[in-house]
Image (cartoon, rainbow, N blue to C red; front, top):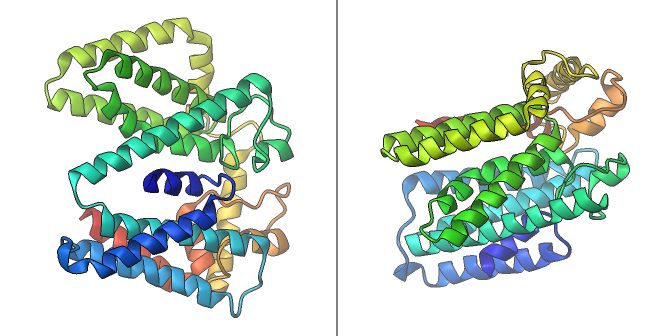
Length: 326
């Protein structure tokens, strides 16, 4: 239940944030008390823990001098969730059995999100926290996230879990996993986000490469046959899908809008080397940026970190990513 609670809290389901913090505190305290009987944390993990804890502390210290907005509290709370999750996993998930527990919790959460998504699409209703209510979007799925893009990205990140469950020897589990997979692809299509489409194609190619590497040719051929049937059945929709990917400019000039937002955020970051505060870049863009129809979401993770938290956190993040993948 620990991992299920954590996943649900991170997906903004109601009232679980307090339970999550209590769970974090309990397991971290338990680890500290029984540290002599636990496996030692690898040096790489220790460096990561130090960085993320430092990031969280810096975000809290920033609140002493920044302009406080509604986003500030939301971003700091999400940072607490994220850093707490990193600490919890580093201290507690150190065996294959516990990793399988995390996998099962993630799969359960994914099924729950897919169920909510279908409820939204079939009824036109949304959870109270969904941004689809604000923008009057009926035929999209956001599940427990704010917008369709966030939900679609979660589905992309969850694909490896589905790839693993599809290979299950149980026929029923295999069929159910394929159903969840097709539902995920459908919701990703509804999000109408080109970058998500590109990530989806990339994940499929990676999975195919994995299967070929381990000589699972029958599965590869089955997937290719399934893809061909799918393409023939939905040829028109896939043509529109492909046009979305290769389009250099969205219907509303979204590429140009994001270019302007990125340039404005870069200028704000240069004038605030210690950061404008967690989540505050949107406030600064609204007050001092170019008017692009009240759109203030940068859609650039790197620039957001630099502008919100400053050069020191950004440099630490870059070094951490280089160290992680080197």
